[in-house]
Amino acid sequence: MDTIKRAVNSVIDEVISLRRDFHANPELGFAEHRTAGIIEEYLHELGIATKRMAETGVVGMIEGENSNPVLLLRADMDALPVEEANDLSYCSGCPGVMHACGHDAHMAMLLGAARVLKGISNELAGSIKLVFQPNEEVAGALSMIEEGVLQNPTVDAAMGLHIWAPLVTGKIGVCSGAVMGGLEVFKITVQGKGGHTGYPETAIDPVIAAADIIQTAQRIQTREISPGKPTAIIFGRISGGTRANIIPDTVILEGSVRTLYADHEDENPMQRLKQLAEKVTAVHGCSCKVEWYRENIPLINDPFMARLAAAVTREMLGSEGLVSDLACMPSEDFSEFSARVPGVFTFLGTGNKEKESDYSHHNPRFNIDEDSLPLGVEMFVRFALRFFNDEEVLKSKTIY
Image (cartoon, rainbow, N blue to C red; front, side, top):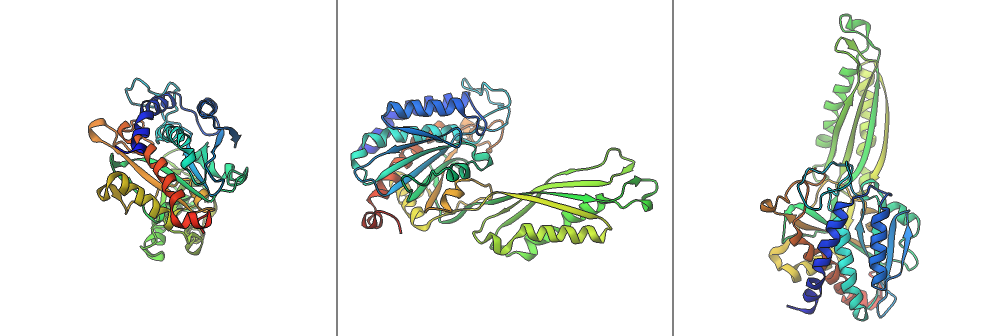
C-alpha cells in the first residue's frame, strides 16, 4: 500500500462520521448555516484559513511550495426538499428536507482530502482552493463566481466529482467534452376563450391547442436538430380548467429543454419551441405567452483535464475501473466553473443493489455505498498531485 492510500485510509472513519452528520442535518440552498459552520471549524482545526462567500459558501486555501498554479477543488453543500424514506440511524432530522443527491458525501470527501493534502502541502507545486458551494440545485456556483471565487488568487483549473448511483461502486466515469446537460425551464400560457362543453362551437379551446403544441414540439428534437446533438424537450406539467363540463380560458404548459452540446445557441431549441408554440396556437385561433430562463449551461470537460482524471482513475483502479462513455442529460452548475477555466467533472460510482444504494438521485430512498467514500477522497488527492506534477503545468505554471 502506497503512502497516499495509507493517508486516505487514516481519515475514512472521520469522513464517514462527517457524511452521516451532514446527512442527519440537511439544509436547503443558501440556508446551509450549520453545515458551513462545521466546515469552517474543521478547516480551521487543520490550520486552513477560510472566508465566506455567497452567504453560506466556504472557501479555504492550502498553500503549496509555489503560489501558482491554483487548482480549485469543489464540493456542493445543499440538500433537497424531499421527505426521506430510508430507515437509517442517521436519517434526516429535518422533515421534508433530505440529502437525496449525495452532497453530504461530497463535502465529507473534500474535507478528508483537505486533511491529507494539508499534511503533504510541502509536496504541492502550487496551491489548492477548497470551495464548498451552496445551492447547487438552483445554480449557486454563479453567485460564488460573481463574488470573485475565481480570483484572489486567480484559479487556473477546477475539478469536481459527483457520487453516481447509476454507476456501480468501484467504477469512476471520466470523459472529455459535454458530460452533463444544459437546462432551460419554460412556461407556455395558451389563451383561448372559455365556454360550455355542450356548446363547444362558441368557445376557442386552448386544451386542443396545448395538446397540439406538445405533439408538434417533438419534431424539434427528432427532425430539426441532428441526433448527434442530444436534445430533450420534456413537458412536466399541464394545468387548466375548473370542471369537466367547462372549456377553460387558459391552459399552462411547463417543462424543460435539455441539451448535451456546447454550441447550444447555434441550435437554440428554446427559440424554436417559442416560434412553434406561437404558430400552433394561431392555427387554433388562440394566442400564447412563452416565458423561460436558463438554469444551467452544458457541462463541458476540458480534454487536458479529462486526460489527467482518466490517468488518475487508471492508477487507482486499473483500466477496468474507468468508464469513458458516461454522459447524461441532468444538469450541474459546476458547468459555470468549467466554462471559465479548464475543468473536469468525474462520476464516482456508488451503486450497490445489495446495500440498496442503487435508487436514483432525488429519490426519497436515495442512499450511498460508503465504500465509495475512500475512492472519492483518493481521487481528489491524487488528481491534485497529478495536476501539479504534469509537465505541461510545470512548464508554464498554468495549463495554457
